[in-house]
Image (cartoon, rainbow, N blue to C red; front, side, top):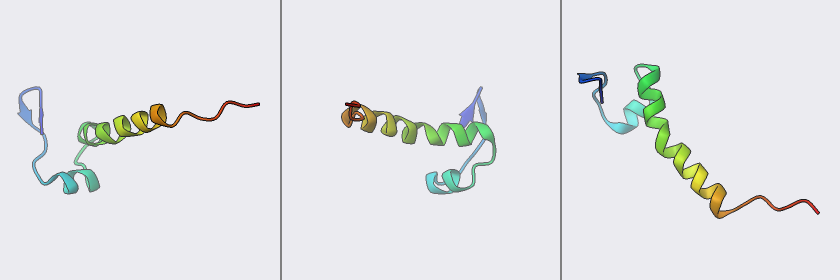
Length: 50
């Protein structure tokens, strides 16, 4: 992974997800998961109270 032109992490995606070396890598690796959660919420809206 590169940040501001410098390599900040190197490794397999699973390893970076399980043991991110810093908060930047942790946040970046979590982004696809958050996006998937948002899409699921849009696809399955909460029922309206009656």
